[in-house]
Image 1: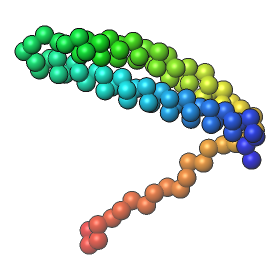
Image 2: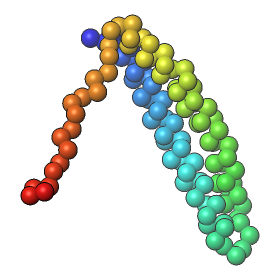
Image 3: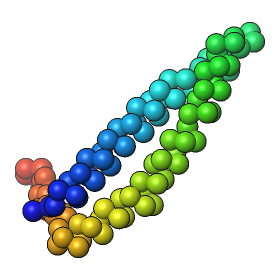
Image 4: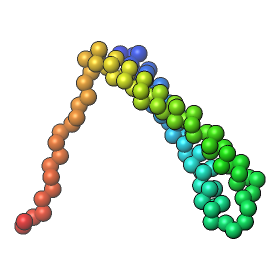
Length: 102
């Protein structure tokens, strides 16, 4: 059985991933305006420029948070699981489907 500290860390990692995903989805919505700007024959509006700037401001901190998970928190979590004797189960091999008559 996984300890409560590991369970709490797993929940915290999941919450952080969800927050990062939400931030990236929001930034993605802002960055879509770049395509609208490129397709337009007019100058970009102030709102479009704001959206592009907002996406550029939002994404780097999100990538830093994701990198912190990848390089620090998840490896530490895996080490804690190893210390508790928890090993991942790769599951069973899948049966390869065969076409009948061949």
